[in-house]
Length: 104
Image 1 (cartoon, rainbow, N blue to C red):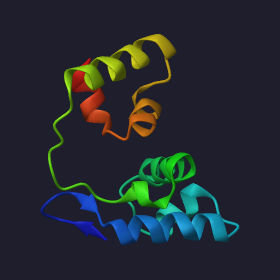
Image 2: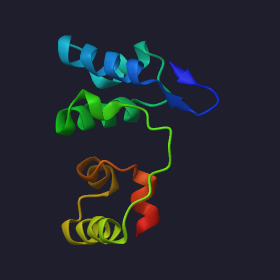
Image 3: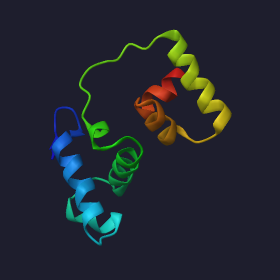
Image 4: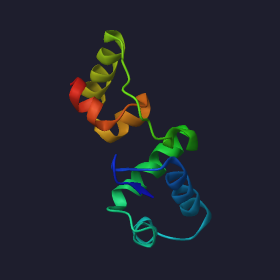
């Protein structure tokens, strides 16, 4: 479910949604409608993250991360060189898309 205070879906909700997608013969759009998601893009992103890093990567992060200058430079360099887009780079480095934008 959506946490009104943080505008984030709970970890358990995201895991349940991804598991339902993997276990059932249903489209992302139909499952997103069934779950009353604000947009199917959320589900698509969660599926991508789970596929790349496992279900544990769907955990809601409620703290600010402090990254070293070396790590930040690595993320930005990777983003600029590989032309993958923010949504893929954030999964690879396990940072939020907004952080990738911010670092650039």
